[in-house]
Image (cartoon, rainbow, N blue to C red; front, side, top):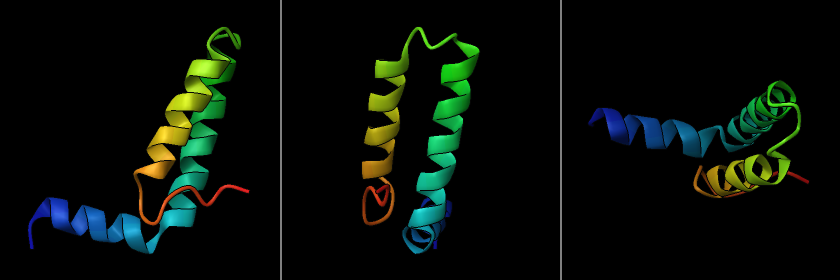
Length: 59
């Protein structure tokens, strides 16, 4: 099993935790940029969450 296969397997098994981490990172980046790029950051986080595991598990 290659590294990429292992990474994908991990993301599939821990989708909820990965989505939560992406959300926290997005919030921190938004804060550090003075909320100037909130829309772009939210869109990026949403797209990243869709591409991990089973998809966006955010409520």
